[in-house]
Length: 305
Image (cartoon, rainbow, N blue to C red):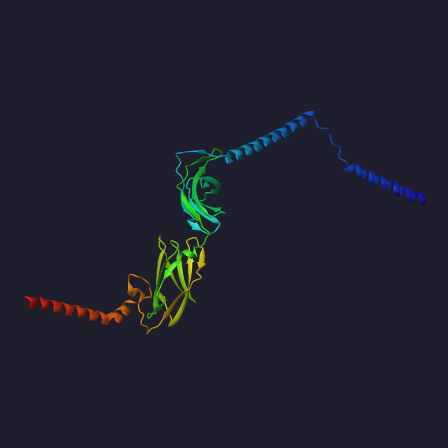
């Protein structure tokens, strides 16, 4: 029985060794000619890769460098630039037909580039400080040798984050009236918006280039009316005045007119009729006196002759 087990073990080892031989692949040595060809092809591909990389680097550097000015190129059109704002972004837009990109200049310094798509471009310029900024653009095209046009006409943008000066605001109105509306006139920052508010009601006006404003038809309720005044400049800065506008409306009152103070026109302050009523008797008395003196003088001269 022991010999039979040894026989089985020997057979198993034989089969295993035979299986290992089948897995081993015996290669023939590469001929010197094939080896030289492989090395040559590998070197060729490496060389081509290096050349392509070098060309890419060269093209990138060439493309990124400042293009050459071509005075014959027509400058693109700067169509829109933020005129005045209290924010931190100037929006710049325009038409650059025939160009690949535009260079954007602020105060004569290049600040960035914008890609041209369908002949249009748009660029947002971030600002930190208040002040006036001069905007211009130039068109760029070509690859790898790029050309640039002359700069466009300048556009001015103003960044203003300072609200209107409350101390410089003046306004005039009559404090009493027997009409159900009144007029407010005054001065403030040029081209500023003026809003007179009471509850949910508001009445708007716009100052002219000299800062003068006039708001008509401000509605009144019977009794005392109190209004707040808001001033907003062109940049969007807004203030509310501490001083309120107070007008008393009495339908049966003696003060008429629109409650506008104007020293040269008494009726505008509701005083013209009052002046006439209070002095009517005095005026008639003066006229009678002048008539008496005149007639007496004429009679005296006739009798003297």
